[in-house]
Amino acid sequence: VHIQNATLAGGVAVGTCADMNIGPFGAMIIGFLAGIISTLGFKFLTPIFASKLRVQDTCGVHNLHGLPGIMGGIAGIVA
Image (tube, rainbow, N blue to C red; front, top):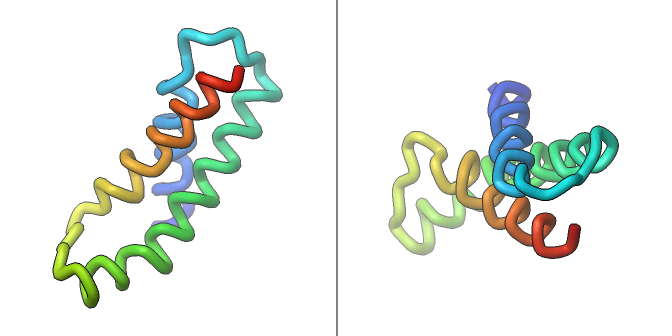
């Protein structure tokens, strides 16, 4: 499941900065980092949100779209 979510997160991050000319290597780097951020979010942030903040993210929207979208926006600013 983490491989599927990481792949989708990479697409979200690259799609966020799609209007920039990032090239194939830049897209691979952004997608790789987004996949790692998404997987770590599912592993560490989801239990913290559930126990400390009482926020249930049953579909993983925060980790699949939120974090990679923010990272892709930052990559779009830098690129």
